[in-house]
Image (cartoon, rainbow, N blue to C red; front, side):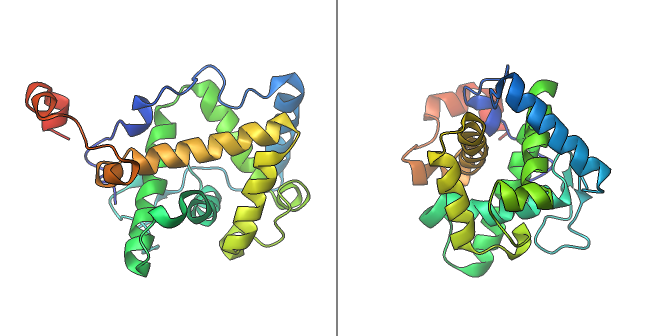
Length: 211
């Protein structure tokens, strides 16, 4: 998993549009805001999960979540196998560690985003976690922790090919933060064909020497 004592810059290194991650437009923004408010009023947990390792062996006990809620983590754990596919290890324990580390890096990356993008991503997660909209909009009937790989993949494909811009942008946001958090991690560079920084850069730049 990610060493929580050594902050990573993988998400910061990609050219992400920080002005508006979802580009929802006024109607989409109002819709997301309404769903997020309704989810909060209904008791949907949106507070950061904090430290989970002491009670949840999936996570590193040293890492403290600063953005993702417990529901967000379950959502990402359901979606990451569908997003990353065969790039994840086949062995069960290695697969669990790779998913958990990616979730931690997603949290760390989002924590570094500006307030506008954090707000949009919070609204997107609320949309997918709130039971009513999970069923009617994402068309996933079980809670994310109980969703099958086929259900997660079908959801992503529907949003990818949807004629509704909000869903397309939601799909791109989910896959972008997931792919950057996974492939941007040094241990996974070889999976994307990236050989890592050249030796001269490692020697010349302090941030590479301390990474």
